[in-house]
Image (tube, rainbow, N blue to C red; front, side):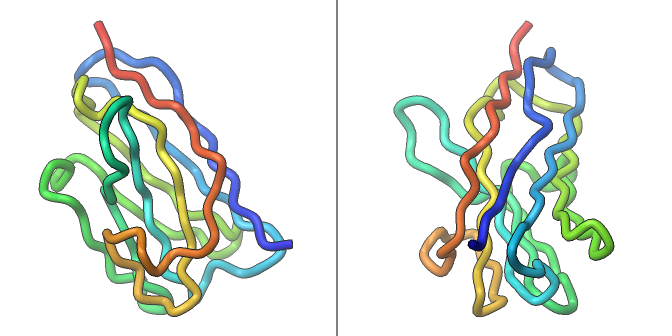
Length: 124
């Protein structure tokens, strides 16, 4: 069974950092496109960071550029989202997703495998 599991969410104050991890089980993430998405209450799900399979070229939403970094650890079959200088508007449930085509876009359309999500709350 192909599964993804996120971890690392929590409650932090504005300006602080969090590191989210997405671990794959039942398959290798190496050549899958990976995306991180978030959904705040009452808002649509949005893509915040993604990485193509293979050469792992990253892309970011404008709202997180310069603050978030997506990276891949092939040995641990994990994709990490490092989030710095967090803002209250970064609050939401964060999901990772895998795209077998390897495209790895900020659109949710190509992703067939999704994790259960991890809550991130940024509040003073």
